[in-house]
Length: 349
Image (cartoon, rainbow, N blue to C red; front, top):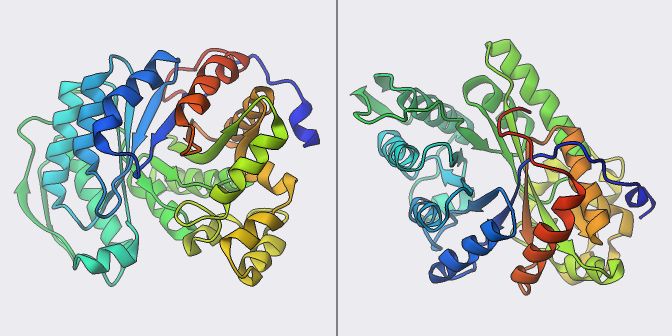
């Protein structure tokens, strides 16, 4: 834990948000997001996982229940909606709540996509077509495409956003990150992640954007949060989450985010040999936990957020432990964020 003993700097911090987890009943959303806003957080991010609450409905409710909170949609699966209808929903939210909507589109979990008949043969090609079309529609352009997966004939929004929106791609691997840099405005990197992975992804993303002549892209970094005044208790509480499915090290799609780590090969070998998630959790070293989450005392958590920002994260989104969300979020807002200084304006990098 030695690297967490340094003081958090007092320079401006990235916007910091939290996830509204899929397991929380949607009728609790209004009170939960009002708490997020009251304690000084910048964003809430909703999810759209199969059979849970819909991303557009929850985003609209969160926007209506708050005054200034940014609301991210992380993510809409690319092949579930026609791109014109997706753009219509996003544009309507943008016009109703200017400057507060942060839309994300991704591959979606391919096993889930198969169960609803929406699994493409090439998820990368499908995402390319969807991001390209939705981005153009949100810019007010007329779109015609006869692609591998999409067909649109002179599609155009009657009420496009009045503002320039940043369309983000929820992706993990190098090819998908490269695609995002070329065709949209940034990425949402899912948990668990580390500063090393953010730095690696940032390099791929920026290079692709520069080659395509696009502006500097946005990096949104998701990671687990476990904050407590007792650092050991915080570490012990986050271990089951780090080892879990979904959102943890046992999820196969996480492997690409581990290769950037110095200890990646050792950790990947451990994941492969562990007989259960419980065994994996018990085998995680404290320094690995520190690299892969925002965990510890308020001071340690502030430093962890700052390390993600220094690695290239423009927004940091934290997934609090599900059994004590209110306590975690209150500590985050009232004791962690003051150590980091004021939030820098969104989009300033």
